[in-house]
Image (cartoon, rainbow, N blue to C red; front, side, top):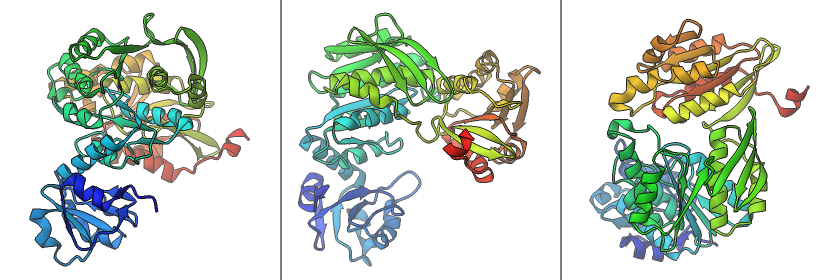
Length: 477
């Protein structure tokens, strides 16, 4: 049996106390009692809303071979006979296990942060590095104070590459996480207006993202967006903490990994990239200029960890969108097809503009319409009204004539749009969902975008539930 961890190693790393007869080892780690697999350890983390200790019995019923619990909660576990490792604090113990995982690993580690594009870039790296060896990367957007140590603790000792996404909502959040991860390469995708409610300006956001430099391994490299207005600031911060290898990507003439030219459509992109002084044609199986820009950082990271550039370029052609981040669905409606672009995972001003551009590049069929279904961008603070109103500009520039909105903040955009745009506004997600299901027509291209907390995934799900998926064969008939 190949163990992720032996129990002896776990007890030592977490400074825990074994209770009962521990198994020899575990095959995985879970913090979700519903999805735990037999042979895995359940870590009973106490979160802001729920306490994992309350679900320990469910984890046991679903096959957990071991649970990790806090000393203070041990009396409440009295009825459970499953082996346990008892620690002072479960999240702290998970962090210690993550640090031990990093210490035993010989993998090349890449960490990604940025205001936009973290998860997509992480998934690109996972995909492009896969031909070169075992790649371990976070599931979903596990990029916070529990997601990063969990991803580290799950990293198999034999992994050859590790890809980590590191996020933040406030200053000081990246620093402890990147010091756990200790990357060889750190990428900052871009600095944009995200989480503005917790920062006064973009400079403060840039300063928080720059914390990623503080955890770089000695001799490690930073990859920065040469096109971003905060580039000079980030470069200076990297130099101040002793980063000696700083590389750049983007369309800028001086970028080390340069997007020289771009041709895109609704399904894919063709770009010409100048890498190490040589210009190569790159096919990317996911649409959008923003994807192509971040692909330059990905190819740069591949060269820095020793991957063959030709194979990495070839792998990009097979790339597919991440769920909720540009994933496309072809749905049967009447005698025609409805194209649904799912951008419902999250939103800020920069990603909204990218999604609108993606919709603009999509071609409706016959009398079909381009429809932007937009919901509130959260965590904008005092800037909220301004950034929602300013979406009118890219909508008009893209020629989008149909805009369906929901949410209190989107009322500002509704009032900013001219009469030439056919605007539908509903106060709640549920009302807009019901309207959208009734109002779409054959030939339409619909793009759904909002912050995750607004719940626009319900609109995507309703459209998929009400209109059958069309297979590739049927699309070609």
